[in-house]
Length: 164
DNA sequence: ATCGTCATATGAA
DNA sequence: TTCATATGACGAT
Image (cartoon, rainbow, N blue to C red; front, side, top):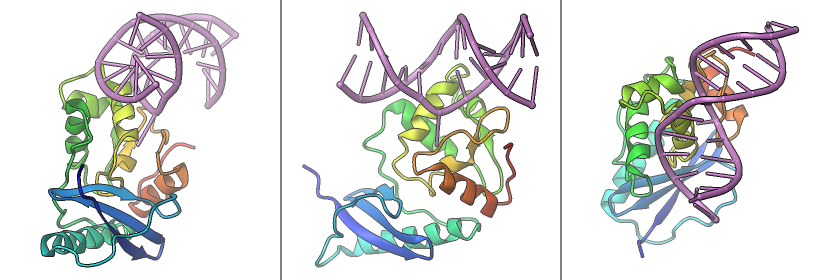
């Protein structure tokens, strides 16, 4: 059984929860998702350092600004395919988008566009793994696990326009 | 422009 | 093995 540390990030958009294992950030939860209380008591110095970085990164994305630095990400829950997708998403800069098929091509599985959508849906760290920057090929919005309002909001913040 | 249909990869039950 | 998908391409209308 892994020990999970849960810490909060207060933003204008609400209270986010960040979950850490002993090797890095494993999950970032949007506000209003039903969630258990934050871990109380003493936090390891390394985790505290990671969390400072996470909080800064989350606030940068919410402000539509580029992220300078990410905490270590722990992809333990992902399959190798999902990890490949998530790592590819990290390369999409703010203000740019890719299609599901483009991501599929980038990881050398050109026919797996639909599966890329599945991997995005399983993304445990939205915002920092920018699955909101993945649109359908026709430039329509696609889906978003945290709710489409969030995807639209984030894209608008980054100056991206989509089809209605 | 919109809609139906099919091909296809991946993952969970 | 069966089922569901945050897709995409194509053709009919």
